[in-house]
Image (cartoon, rainbow, N blue to C red; front, side, top):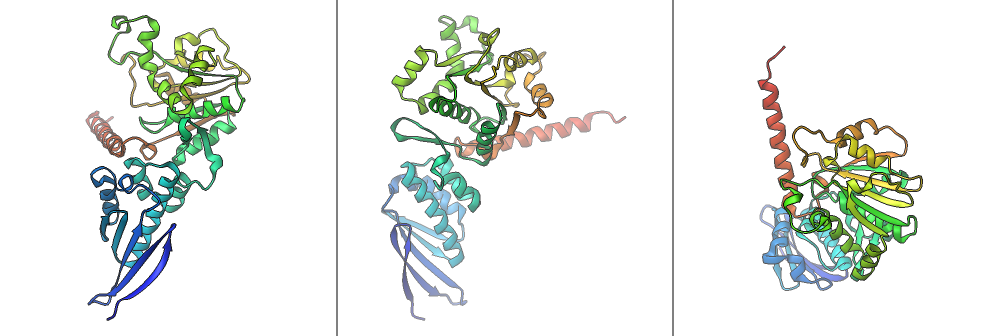
Amino acid sequence: MDNTIRQHNFITNNAFEKTKASKNSKTLTETIINLETVNPIEFFGVNNGKLDLLKKKFPLLKILSRGTQIKLSGAPEQIETAKEKIDLLVQYMQRNGNMSENYFEQILGGDDEKTVDNFVDRNPNDVLVFGPNGKTVRARTQNQKMMVQACDKNDIVFAIGPAGTGKTYTAVALAVRALKNKLVKKIILTRPAVEAGESLGFLPGDLKEKIDPYLRPLYDALDDMIPADKLGYYMQTRTIEIAPLAYMRGRTLDNAFIILDEAQNTNDLQIKMFLTRIGPNAKAIITGDPTQIDLPKNQQSGLFKATRVLRNIDGISYIELDEEDVVRHRLVKSIIKAYNKDDEKQMKEREQMQPKK
């Protein structure tokens, strides 16, 4: 049977499809997609790492790359689905210039509606902050977007979830947005100074030098969102203040956006002290990861009680993030799932070992 060739538009480039009839009468399609509007090296990834993810997502397709082109061979419906995903990937890269393997995998794995929502710039108003060099900071996942909505509607938000889900980063972005929009006069970022297996007294330097390493994640988030000279000015004038939780005692925190990070490492008295510092014109976000408690064994985390007793109070919202919100390396999601599965297994074993009443 003669081959038929037809031309169609894909994104901004022309691609050609060649349709063949196989011996068993099933139609196979070959499509060549040009990637002239993005950097193909960035698209395919180091050692073709991203291309391998694409192949893994569509195992029934034969996918080849050459220069600025991708050749897809297989069933028409599979080709069409792959083209839609590649379209989203290209749109993201055209907007942002680059893409991590983690985001690449999220776009490939998400269903169409959520993926378009999270990654395609259908609504430029969802940008939280424009950082240095034109970087855009926005909520990427569904739960992160719920966190933004909760903050817009409530004065106190609890954001609970495992490491890497963007709790702190999203919270800092919301605080910077509020400061830039002149909704608050200052930002206060605080953490309990709990030593993860070390004693502060044995570390070199004065108190600030001892504590700063524990506050580093907050500095890193601010560096992404505020130019260095402006950030220095804000720190010098105390418009942005980063301090251990103990420094909050006795203060009234008003006209401020306050973030308590790593709240799982507070006890009952500490988290109550923090919550009762909040002034009438302030907003607060409390973040925590119940799986990473560094308190002494004889102390219980105050975060659990706070989320339990305050959950139904009007003006206080509770958002729970999970492994689906992980925005770090693509393996982090798998690591969290593996640990959660093992924890559930050990819990069942302990329940079985308990004597029956």
